[in-house]
View 1 (tube, helix red, strand yellow):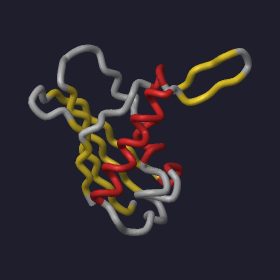
View 2 (cartoon, rainbow, N blue to C red):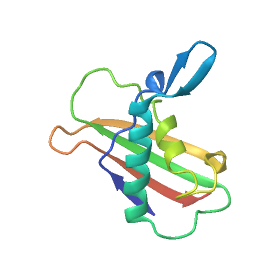
View 3 (cartoon, rainbow, N blue to C red):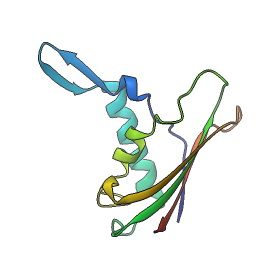
Length: 113
């Protein structure tokens, strides 16, 4: 199964905010997570997958600024309960970074491991 999402994940550095001793999801990260979830739901209408999974993620950024390839935590979390039951099911993960100014996007391929 392959998903093609137009919402790119926010940086892991921007996932949480802290006020005093309280730590919570940053509003920008929350909006991103919701957008990814809606896009995934529009493409995948089945029940969440079970069992071990192999996931391949291709991140196509619009520019060549520094984008860390490991900033996909919010992406994997956003697909939990929609595509898979829990992102802990992922036993193999391949991540690729590329650039496409005209069509920035995320392409995700999911297979049973």
